Amino acid sequence: MTRLTPDMIAGVPEDKIDLDSALMRMCGTTVKGMAIQAAGMEEDYDFSSFKVAVVPITSGLGVIGGFAQSVDAIVKRLGMNSYVTKGTDVQGFSEGIRDGADMIMMADDTMFIAYNVREGKQTNNSWGTAMGYSVCLRNAAGGLEGKDVLVIGAGFVGTEAVQILKGMGANVSVTDIIFEKAQALEKRFGVKAVKDKEEAISKHKLILNAAPASFPGRIMAEGCIVSTPGVPHEFDEEGKRRAKAIIHDPLEIGTAVMAVNSAFYSLKKH
Ligand code: 2YJ
Image (cartoon, rainbow, N blue to C red; front, side):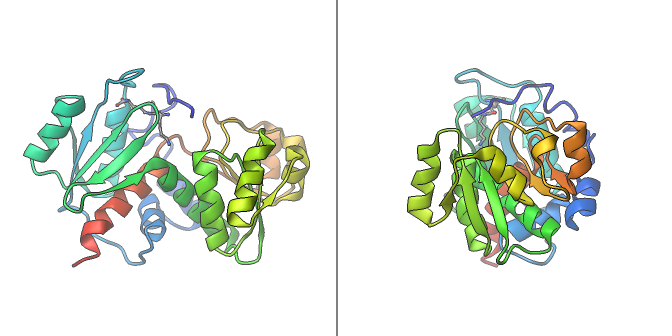
């Protein structure tokens, strides 16, 4: 799993990439609209009564400069009442509980979760990322029913994406540099494992790239749509020209889906 670096998320708190405009252009929804769809809901919601504590975590490789502040800003853009705890780790968690937070968000080197305190339920970033990028792909493609979709990468996000995209009615193929991992998903979920990644890319107009690598534009199909959460993120000029849309951000799509999904554990009840 790739670790984010401060430079990858540098513009997130101030919304420098203006993801709302980019998603609106490519997929027809705002970030909040996409996240609401990803949580299986339709109408707009006012999340302002929902209090979120973001806890910086020092374990493992430690705090990533700007990470908690980025998560906080993303959650605020959804209209939630968010703040970064003063304390870190268990102290920060305890602070959130003490202050009456409805949700605690925190990440170490392997997991990033939103914990709904009221319901005792967690939403993890692998699912949030796979769901968010699948919804974006579906919206950009005008639906996925009966369409061929390639998932690159059979890790945590890829495994979630395979199931989600299949559930959206797509004919899913999956590829991984370790072919056995793609074959394992074929066996588990009845999707198609493909060995030749480059050939698969050139044959697909709809791609969810859940691997921490991009690919050369010369092998991309004209007019393809690439939903690509992986970091580092880099597509060459030819790729950018050939693609109808390249959907990417370093943190916001997955985080927004986690937060909104977590909030709905409480709000769906009322
Ligand atoms: O609180 C902090 O600043 C750090 N402990 C954040 C660590 C963020 N974690 C990562 O970037 C890992 N790659 C895990 C992310 C999970 C993505 N599915």
